[in-house]
Length: 88
View 1 (spheres, rainbow, N blue to C red):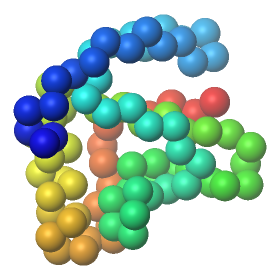
View 2: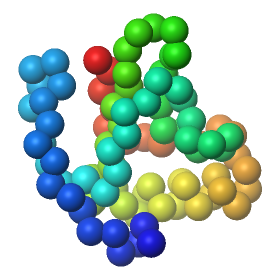
View 3: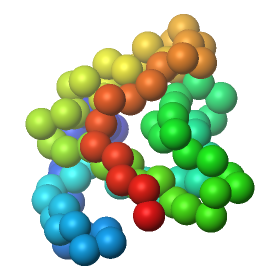
């Protein structure tokens, strides 16, 4: 599914920073991981009163697929995603 999911155009402004683009993944998180092994927001903290925003652009698809597949297959709890992140 992820290999052919079409990127979606998002118009986004976070704290005055314009980051509109085409994304295949966009997450607003207050926890570090999605499930037990895929850490999308390694700096997120539930008690800081902020959300961490994580996005994956079309050009990062193969890297994201590789990281998420490895995390799922091997159960690597240290699989951190090196993608654009913003805190607000």
